[in-house]
Length: 124
Image (cartoon, rainbow, N blue to C red; front, side, top):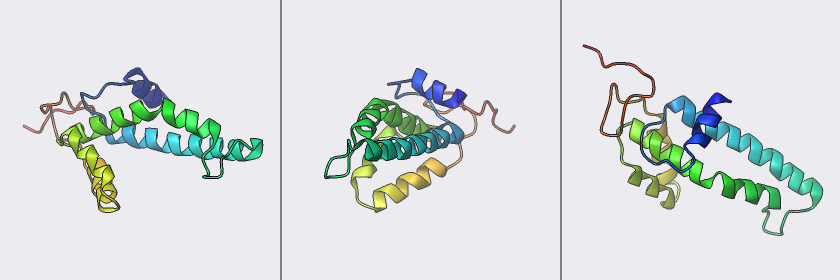
């Protein structure tokens, strides 16, 4: 839970770096919460004909900025600019490229976006 609080403390911070674990734990937690809220929406009957529920919609809006922020910081960690996030608007290929970027290891040592979140110095 510590990583989730760290992401929420940086609610709308788009600079710096985020480790792979910080990013992927945040994604996993949001998927689980979205699934549970979708189930609750279905039970309560607050789902629209298009399939969106009231509770899941409110939650999605609440975590939109932190999700964008942690995605941009994750791209920074692998040495990419946050503008690469715009690939999400390219159907299929964009999502695949972004997933590959999110899976890349951190650049060793500091880069132009900040210190390595792993805290490791580059090999001498």
